[in-house]
Length: 313
Ligand SMILES: [Zn+2]
Ligand SMILES: [Zn+2]
Image (tube, rainbow, N blue to C red):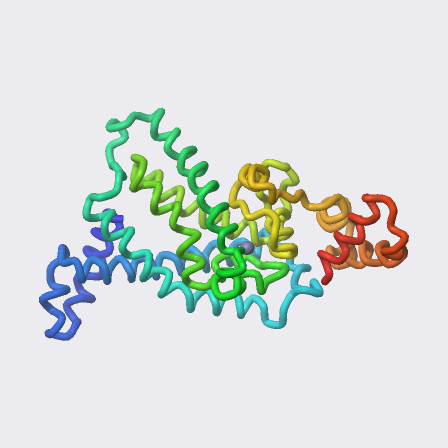
């Protein structure tokens, strides 16, 4: 972050602080004053997260997002506008509570390093894998903890307003929800050495991944990857698939749910050419209605009815 802070000072913030009221001059005239550094880090975080959010969400919306989701029965009126509104109103607070992580980082308390030779290329590659493994685990447990009844209502429920999500839902959280789920990213570099550019790149890629699991583009049905299909199950059914990149911790924690056969085959992969996901939901519902619940004997049929209810309740 010190690299970005230096660039921001040189190319804008120095002149911005010159226009601050005289009473604040002792706090903002020196680049090294803690108040100015914290204020600058907040501004940089706020601008950065807005750029990442609007750039990648918009790109995803126009390139990957299946826009037929906009006609899904569970798509809320003005949902995209509501997702954007929650995101941009949360960003200032999320950025504010994140400032201490960045502040102590530029003061040298983290284990970020700038010279690859310090740890070598082998460790450079390993640290990226370790970062992904660490954050995959951390986010799983924080997310699962946020579903505890004592926390869910005030902390995480806002993100579950979106039963079917768009890329703009990816950052649409209560400010502290977004912050808590980001803690593993910040904590990692205080515990383990990581090259500063690898960290910055990983940070951006992680944001893109978070958008990708909300874009409704079901590229993969690989059971090891927490894909958009898996995260859609989480939004629809709450108690499954808390993971971020992989399904590892859901499997260990007993919360893994592969998108059901019907969910995958009919809603995502096997639908006839031209059929929409909505058609698929209707098909599943119609099938379920043909089988009275009391007469359900086969697990397959029972599962089919469950899938229909989950998709459309
Ligand atoms: Zn989500
Ligand atoms: Zn959740």
